[in-house]
Image 1 (cartoon, one colour):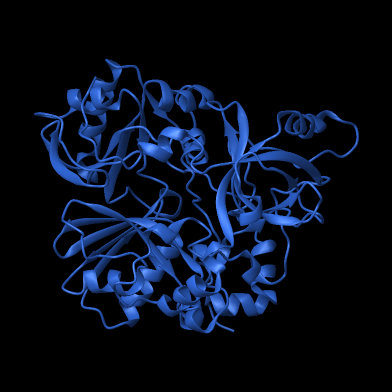
Image 2: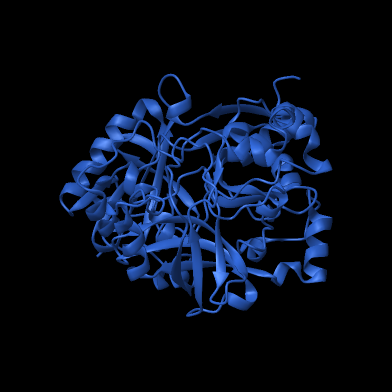
Length: 464
């Protein structure tokens, strides 16, 4: 039947069956120390002092270079490329022809004709597919996460952030602290090496992301650690790193809308049956054999704010229809703060003689690549989908990023999360368990007020 995603779907009987029974575990970061101290203190440090995030090992990289590089991006992105200077970055968002989300990534413009996309597999594959089949004059190189790659990465990527991040960065770089706008960058020197520096921050705190060739990683890393030691900087390991998005409000793993639809048919024939998209797992209490019930629109995740209809792109007509028929206003991305007593009771059930609730891995509790849990009103009717759940030591709470209908999106609204699978699947990480209902309170996404207000501020940066 072939070695494509489409063939894999046919063999499984449906896209839902393929993903629901997949044995691929939830995300881990291979190549990075799980904990340098302990994940609780590492979480606390990004609010209290400063942290060093090592982003070298868990993301996909796709480098796009050539005369048609910008055209490829413009043809596939819902956001505008009219203003995109060298050394700046954008949050690239792509949708299918039917207007459902493929995914997002961070897209860096390194040179006039060279870009680097960094993020999850779905949008890397989407860009690579269109580059290969659309007649674009571009050259590509890609770099997979360390778990899927033999040998070292092609580039290093470190981020320093937190209230004291700028003091660390000022000590680490040669010269003065650069003055740049949010998501804009410059070139600096660290340990004698030229480094790309992007103003960025992942939980509402100031910081910079530093990128360069892997051959320079050791010297740059040591210089950052040396500067950080003078300011109580903490290294963040793989366990805590995966949870920073709970506070910043970004949903890292929405199911890409590639498994159905005419516009993605050729893409399914192009993707390998061994690709990440074909092997990823789907789990949680939200259950539908119609895979399209798991799709999101870009409006569901708040990407309507970056949609620009100043260019033609894949899915434009569908998004215009969503704007016209009210679909764009139907749902909202929120943070759910889980009830302490209900969560403690569910977690404590592991000590009961009888079968307990689904185990909570900590700090990230997801047990599938794509986690979808059913959210209900207090009356028991469907209210939305909870997608990314874990514990925050800063908030002393279990949190999840969810998409709920607009009627239940007001901060303070009480809802219920159904935790665990109604009929446990064959996924190896799913033990025999019983479903439980856990109360939760709707709050904004991002949850952290500073992330909602200062995160994209273009105010000048100064060290303390």
